[in-house]
Length: 256
Image (cartoon, rainbow, N blue to C red; front, side, top):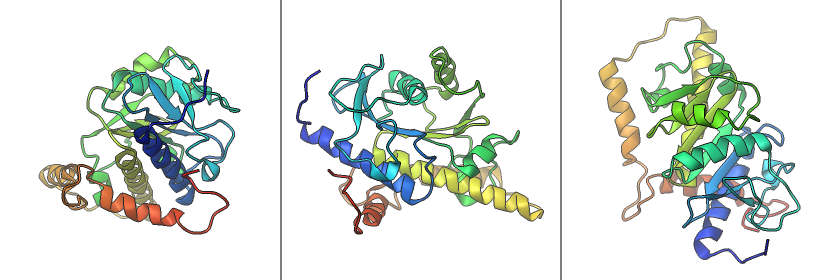
């Protein structure tokens, strides 16, 4: 292993990924040192960046991220290793879904709760409708340490889904960019929190017709309300807003 200076495109992905980790911590969606966000190294199909195992999300920086391949080999010198369960999940997705520039996995209270409900995510609120007929499920097999599970996870994910509920476990989103995958996760967790609040009220749910559910999902997919002129990133407006949370005084910058 030799240490190399990241290309400009890799450095940008590193900064975006470190920012995503810190935003997950900022919004309280982290789980101690567990769960993971990964991003594909630009220009490769078999390398990705992931968190150093043992650091809190609020402390992750661009330079502390660990670069590994689909075999789990660490490709550059690092004082850290990676979470074996994180490798299992993220290597599976990156190996099969080349459109997955970023993969976000969380264990939020609301996400784990909804993942443990037999009915899963319900189309009962606007955030949930973003995922109408667009979220898939993977059965719980224990802590994801068995590499054989990767084949079953890939099969359940399929070729197009961008959101998965891992039964009795948590949530996962994937997208071409860090910004898109993170915002999907924020919205998926919000949908779960609202569902639980509705169910806790004991009141009947106001139904939404399938036609309106599908229309709303397509509106979210278009990204038009968040798109800036001449930008290929549909979530750039929101992403820039989210980054403002990280500009306040902190012990270190995610860009370091």
